[in-house]
Image (tube, rainbow, N blue to C red; front, side, top):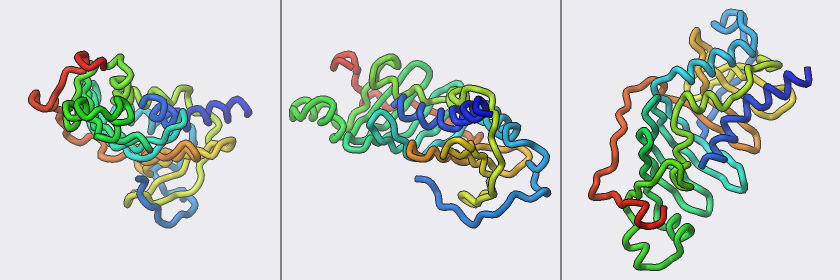
Length: 240
């Protein structure tokens, strides 16, 4: 049983950890016990989690928002992930500033705000005048380019690691107008909230002190586009 709990804990916390290392939750309604008439009644918690992770992996697109903490940093995320393409959105680092991010294939563009550049590159007015308000094209393998490591539904789903084991079904909760079932790791504060539907989808991962991630807009039509060339600088020229 101890091994099962350990595996469950890694599964539920892994996505939160990945978000923090690689780079606003909606209010909930009333709660109550899951009833036998729900589409998930005949499945165990482990089976439900397995299906929800597989559906995330297979999604063409998903929007991920929330706040996560790790390595002494707190990140606010709002990213739309597009399968086999990349992602676009924003990441804000508490006390450091925010970054707009576009990643398409192996190409990555970042647009930090003025606060971020001051923290990262000093406050030289001449440098800030050139960099501020521009996208910087960087290598995905660079420190700033590594922010794109969070950019695919399948990569995120893969971060859960081990096959779910030892999880439990808890209460039903309304999140963003959806009825969800809480999947709990008995040995950890983390919870997975899955839509109570024949095709369960991850709606929220609540990782306790590590933060919360919300998942929405599954399989919507999204086309990623590179920033205009007139707004883009070559990061290699500036040491990025």
